[in-house]
Length: 223
Image 1: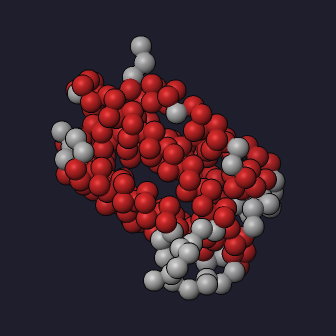
Image 2: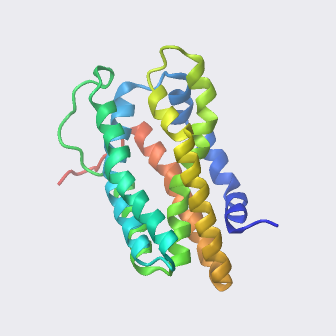
């Protein structure tokens, strides 16, 4: 018997196929991604993680039980500490060169974080959980898919990034996020349609985030 997360994953198959063939990820996998594009991605992702951590903290506050609250709150802390440190370390390497100034959230980054925070603050808990799940699951999928290619090259420039999302702790966190979202769906079967929509919208933002990074998206008229 399948759970909500299985149905949501199947329903977004076309979006995930589009993610799998993104030039950004293909070039990241074989190590040919331009350092400037990877720097742009990391800077945007660092900004994204700030918003994602706020969404997770809001979700923790609205959780139906202590175990769910503890997981979402711990995930928010992880965004604020562990992954942020990873980005800082990678941005500090000679490979990526010097920063071009203080990063500003791109249109896609701002839209995605605004969507997640709004869902976590205002949507029913099951729908909000479905909205935050793709960030876990898509990264876990991408990490496990790219890891064999990255490991095969002794001097792969982006191996540490790939290894982080292929590693057991992140894969286990993704499994827990799926279990909690499935439990939320079972508790509110009337909300499954809204949950599927939230999951699909967030998955589409994952696609657009990497496309924007490859294009080094910026505002047409800076403020």
